[in-house]
Image 1 (tube, rainbow, N blue to C red):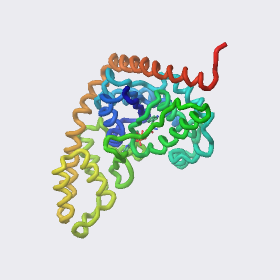
Image 2: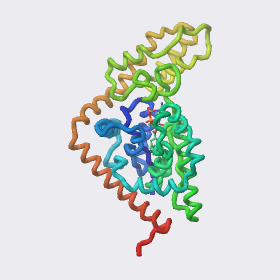
Image 3: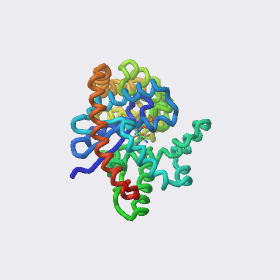
Image 4: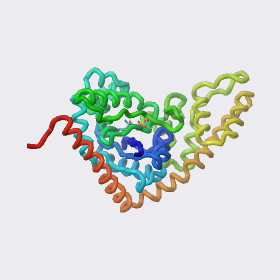
Length: 332
Ligand code: ADP
Ligand code: TRP
């Protein structure tokens, strides 16, 4: 029996290199060896009240981008979360055993209180139980995500273990966050600090759908400094971030070349950025071209979503049926 894998991304924008290397690249690699479910987390995105047309547009975007990155819908179950109502049912059950104190302590909840004090809704508070429902609905053991999701996975384990203890069984397995490189990754952004994230603005992100001109412009504006002040000095964060990006898109020789120039204080940031931009363009061009083609193929997209929903519901139904029995819902 293959191990089961689940992951999803909220449809709140286009995918960037952080989403790719933190999550989607792992989806693509895992699909051959695992029983995979990759979904579009549209229920989660309702916490920020998107308009119906924005919501639909972004769901389509993520579906197209999953396919363009190489997720094969014949091999993998790709679906839209809201097409599987069993997830919402499991979310309700899990909420009965999720405590206010632990939900309030979640780092992402605290972040949201800080960034959107005017919209602290119950959906934000219970975001981790909905995420646990996504994972447990297929009884998954591996969850490919970036480093920022580690705490959510810890909470998923708390909820599944608590459910098992309450009903004195071992129905739900323990799910672990996963990355192919052994460690969970955090891809830096272009603004000199922190991770690549949509919430830090378009200038901070390289999107998979960015054209060569846009990539060149964004990289040329990436934050740098006045250059190294002494030989072999440690790199400040903004510079290290650009080297980290070079590490993921350029060859090891290119990276070593610029590393040596930096150590010898003879690096020219203009040349360094030009090389970084060109290597990013080489990386993203095949994906961008596929995005452009697939976006036009509505019939195919509809077929993929429909097929995925059927397969996901089949698995979800089995779990919900068992959970209902465990809880004690019995028909007369
Ligand atoms: P964003 O921060 O742009 O809103 P999301 O929070 O929607 O991105 O993340 C979707 C997925 O991509 C998650 O699995 C997350 O861990 C991963 N991810 C996002 N940004 C990064 C990053 N900079 N480095 C690694 N993984 C990331
Ligand atoms: N919370 C994840 C994010 O912000 C998205 C997500 C929702 C998810 N449900 C999930 C990821 C289940 C993995 C498994 O990126």
